[in-house]
Image (tube, rainbow, N blue to C red; front, side):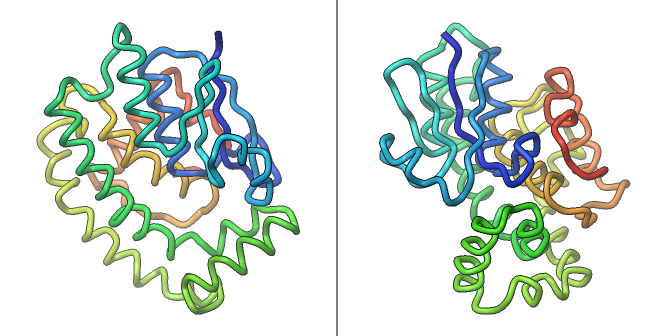
Length: 231
């Protein structure tokens, strides 16, 4: 039976843009599991309320529902052990947990001010009103003010990625010779940005730029074929 995944979209259902949903899209492809994606929007909270969640991703596997990207990754690993491992063992899982926290606190939080004003342009009127009100309350300023100095702020964001950059100078993926869930955690943030914003986050000579290209082309170009801006 095909798994089902609720994932965040705006006016264009072919442009999914949640960094957390993209972590799971890549994880499912890594496992070789078929999935039916269900487009979900910010103001459709009632659709996933039966699964005890108010945000995506939400994975449905027969009678089981799993919420939160990290919980879903662990579920996939434990439920489908005969498929390629996302972690490569207990040590890899423990390390990926740290990367998961880093991905939330440093990567996604660092990206948000750079692209948040572009996200609202991808939403319908009701979702745009919700997104603007909730995010402006969070930032304490308008979305346009948040992103106004991104040409300067991006330099600080790039510097924050130095540990990742040094790792990718020594090996092609965070997981080593091949990608694992640590890669998908980080990639989800960049795919989020690619879906919603034309702003250049990386320079072409950055090892992270080349890494992102490799993951865009993985699994038959799954991520590259999803609608987004050139990178």
